[in-house]
Amino acid sequence: MISMAEPRRILLIKPSSLGDIVHTMPVVAAFKQRWPSAHLTWLVKRQWAEVVQRIEGVDAVWPVDPTLASWVGQALALRAQRFDLVVDLQGLLRSALVARITGCTQRVGFANGREGSPWWYTHRVAVSTSEMHAVERYLLIAAELGVPVKDAPQFRFRLLSQDVTTLRELFRRKGIDLDAPWVAMNVSARWPTKRWPAASFAAVATQLAARGIGPLVVIGGPDERETSGQVQSLAACPVIDLTGETPIGLLPALLSKACALITNDSGPMHVAAAVGRPVVSIFGPTSAVRTGPYGAGHTVLTHDVPCRPCFSRVCRHAVPMECLESITPEQVVAAVVSQQSCRAVSR
Image (tube, rainbow, N blue to C red):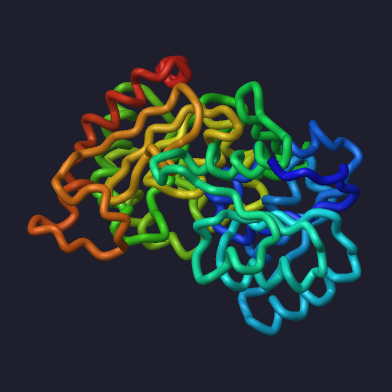
């Protein structure tokens, strides 16, 4: 265990991605419970800053752009903050260098960090196995700092009233009620190998609508409009398309209002789990043990093949995308129908 005085100022380095940011939330909650008067700054890529601003326990958000100049400039600016503790959960060379440049004498990271990052830490935390969830792996650092998590890890978003007001007006314009039952669908993902076919999502929407479950609301970022449009055009039922219409900062409030989320392995999946909404997730090349929706009440659908999980963005299997595309719409529909929250949607 690392011996140190109670820190007054903490820097947490976790710039990306959305799912990883959500997985870090219990570390923040644990730090704030142990050191309630400590000031916690979070270094994050600018594209995710609005999400981090809505995490309870974060006192300051320090955005960084993807350029090397931005990283160096922000690292130099952080020196003036005089941190007592720097925790690098990213474990890459640039994040470790930022930690070093701050001048803080207590720099903590993982012993198995990549790109030589452990060389720049004063304390290295061992990870005994890769087969653990990211939430539990991050909490190893909290435990090493004398901040054990005795109860269930805490995910605490600030669900702002103005966010809900903005969403309620958006839903009104779309002809639906934010506060009435509805089901969210996230139909894209960063990796091509994580993307279940648009036709399969459309079939799920059609079958759920036939059962009286809905309305179905497709969510996503501006870059995902093409896939969402395909789902909307292929479904034999009305599908509400909000793709590109909800800024990233609204995502916690948005998903907190859904009855459930149907999704690929994606960032919104983790946000939904964090706000306590049941998730039905479709996993192909990745591992739900490591990065599945955290907590109880979720369903993860997989189809095992010898090469799964390969963690690859390019499928090299003899039957392309077999692990993902062998999952059927009927399996997804059955998982949604089994959710207590979705039974209440039926009309």
